[in-house]
Amino acid sequence: MPRDPLIGIVGKPSSGKSTTLNSLTDAGAKVGAFPFTTIDANKATGYLQVDCACSRYGKEEFCKPNYGVCKKGKRFIPIMLLDVAGLVPGAHEGRGLGNKFLDDLRQADALIHVVDVSGTTDAEGKNTRGYDPVNDIEWLQDEIRQWIEGNLKKRWGSIVRRHTATKSSIVDTLQTQFGGYSSNANLVARALKRISKLPALESWDDAMITEVVKAFMEEKFPTVLALNKIDHPDADKNISKIILRYPHTKAVLTSAITEVLLRKLVKQKFIRYEEGTEFIDTKEDLPADEELRPMDERLLEKVEKIRDLVLYRFGSTGVVEVLKAAAEVLELVPVYTVRNIHTFAGASGSSVFRDCVLVRRGRTVESVARYIMGDVTIAAIEGVGGMKVSEQDTVDVGRNDILSFRVAPAGQR
Ligand SMILES: Nc1nc2c(ncn2[C@@H]2O[C@H](COP(=O)(O)OP(=O)(O)OP(=O)(O)O)[C@@H](O)[C@H]2O)c(=O)[nH]1
Image (cartoon, rainbow, N blue to C red):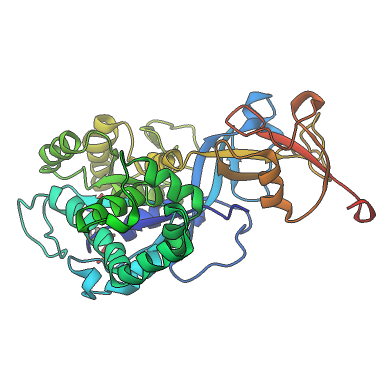
């Protein structure tokens, strides 16, 4: 059964993790109850922005999610975020919060690596000038790799003996070792497929183990780079450098501090701002708006600067995009479950598309049902138009993403 996806926010001290997390989890701007059963101190709820199914059917005004919100067809779906603080070079040997950080990381399904592209903080987060942030991408990946590799090598002798004695497959043997990172046999198999001509496990040398661990990391911790502090004058050259160096890694340009400031100004009623866009309106832009308050000269100047330095140059603060990018690397698809497949209403009332879950593209409809309802027997599944959907059909955006399940009465299970 799939579990709730979890996105870890990692990065060196002072790269802007907390600021990014604050801007993603700003519950003040969102309403709606809390969907997750347990939440630890280091977890927070972020909101993933998607085009809601209600906008496909012109039902925006009736859309009332049970969790999160929907504003004019833009839905904010709750998603769990994990704050992974305390990572410094040498963490795998116990430096900083070291192993605590790495243990937290086990549960994450994808990572957002917040990189300070202003070059004003060194590897440990101390103030400096001209630091090359490419280093941060390298050492962070290296720390994770050495941690996993260290755990594996400690037991390598007995792993090989057991593998030979039990005549296990490589996938089974590795899954036994990687189970602690909340992986599964499919994930391990996908990782091993990345390696051409995989030799028998008994003959793996150190270099081969490193290659396997790297392949495992690509599957287990797909990573999005949040190139943060783009508002800083030194950011441009570092951004180009990173993008040239890592052309295949998803990178999003962010100014987390700008997003936090904009949301504060919204709360104080100084501006109207549509999250994820370049648009802000002030009292000067909308004189007829009675709720908006006028700003003094200093604040107006600040808003102008934000427009010029961030919004007009980059199109947005990037914060909404970074979460979308993380959901994309995980191939998450919003699936809506409704009671009435013709009106899309729930059990009571006229509101539509009340329930929505995020699941990986390509999952079967049956596994989605189990994820939502647990171990029940399903009598029938309907898709849009009342079409019968098979349990083995898979979900994707626009395909089997609106479903109605009929559960068999207890006596028929
Ligand atoms: N210029 C600029 N500064 C930023 C931005 N985001 C964060 N900062 C500043 O960077 C400093 C560190 O930000 P934090 O969010 O506390 O960084 P952190 O990674 O959580 O740091 P630790 O708690 O030490 O791990 C603070 O002074 C922030 O105001 C940004 O987008 N632009």
